[in-house]
Structure formats: structure tokens, C-alpha cells
Image (cartoon, rainbow, N blue to C red):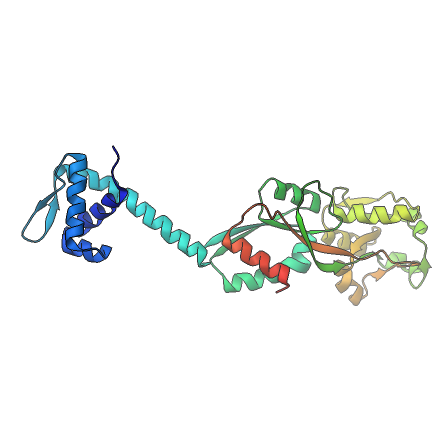
Length: 296
């Protein structure tokens, strides 16, 4: 049965108000137009839907049955439209981001704080993982975008935007004070207990590639999952830690750790915002992504 859906919308309002005039006002239609639509619907359905009364109209038994379903369906549509508008107006929504502990702490967190203050109704989910895993999440559509550190190795054609410079250094505690104020060669690291991140991280890969260029190979004493733990191990004199400078800053300032000096520094690298430009994302995700790319 091919029935004009507009008839059902008009039927809903007449059934709601039990009055054709009031329904016409709510629909911004003329009273004759509403009456004609009801007549057309009754003709299509081959059944009377309303009975006229002194105060307006009331539903027939058949009309009551039909109205119970139309009401449920139409009000669901209205609710969906309301939620849609709320998303467009940034009242509600969800953003899924991938980030490592490092990019979250030293870049993303301050931006999330400002964004949440302006849009408190937006739910933000952060999947904490190293760069290679974050790229897999992005490729699999599990996140809207990622904030990762270079090097970025992926066969996927992602859009990559550098947003902050970072530098890798080696730090140590008081047990290794004999190394302080000396200019070292990287080869000396081969004879020291090294503490570094696990192999599945961009940081570990980058530092090892640099050391390979210096013809140096390290055999880590400890391989840890987070940079915070690297600092704790170094403070407790369990080894010389390979860390990003930002993580060690406070401990270096307090004197608990010191930075080892070498003939040449490890080159700077970047935090980057990575996303797939071919995949559409939510209004909220677009807004936050835009702010990150513009440096707001």
C-alpha cells in the first residue's frame, strides 16, 4: 500500500490534539488542507479514523490502533531529529582519539581541557597506545584521529601534521655522577645499564636508528611500557634512561637526575596529528581536529 507519509504526519497531530483546527495551527497548514489529508488517508486505508464531536474529533477503534504505532514512530523520528540538532550545535557528541602517554601528557591534555570547558556535553574517549598501535586503530576506524610521535611508518595514506618539536635525551641519577660534566661518545652507552621503552614504540625505534648511525648497539637492562616508569627507574639508579626531554625536566631541575652530554645531540622529532581525510568524522571531532591543526 503506497500511502503519502505526509498524511501520517498530519494524522499524528490530529490524533494528538483531538482537534483539526489546533492540528492545522501546529502544522502551519490550513484547516481544509488537514481535513482533506485525513480523508485521503482514510480512503487509502479504507477505514474511518476519526469521529467528529462537539469539541473536535476522537479516534475510532481502528484509529486508536493505528495512532499507537504512528505516535511511537513519529515521536522517535522527532527525538532523532532533536539529538541530531544537539550534535550539530555541539551540545552532545563523541570523539574517539588515539594517543600515547607522552603525547597525551605533553600536548593533547591541555587542548582537551580547553575544549571540554567550552563543550562540556561532548564525550571524549582516549585510547592510550604507542604510535604503531594508534595507527592500526586509525586504519581500523576505531578512532577519529591520533596524536603520535615520529617516526610514523604506515602504508596507509594518512594526513600527517606536525604540531610540536620534541627531543630524546639520556638521563641518570647520583650513582652515575662520574658521567656528569663529561662529553661522552655514544659508544660508551654499550657499557652502561640502559633503561628504555619497549620495542613496539616509535621512540625506541627512533633512538635505536640514530645509535645505529653512530655504529652503536645497546642491550637494554630494562624495557618498560611507559616513560613515567623510565624516570622512576633512573631516579632509583637502576640505569641510564632514554627519555623524551619533557618527561625528565622536573627531575633535572630538582637535581635528582642529570642529562648526559654527548658529542652531538639526537635530532629533534615531532608530535603529529594523524587522520584519514577520506573518512568522515563527527562535527565534534572536526571541531577539535581543526583546533589542533590551527594550534589553538
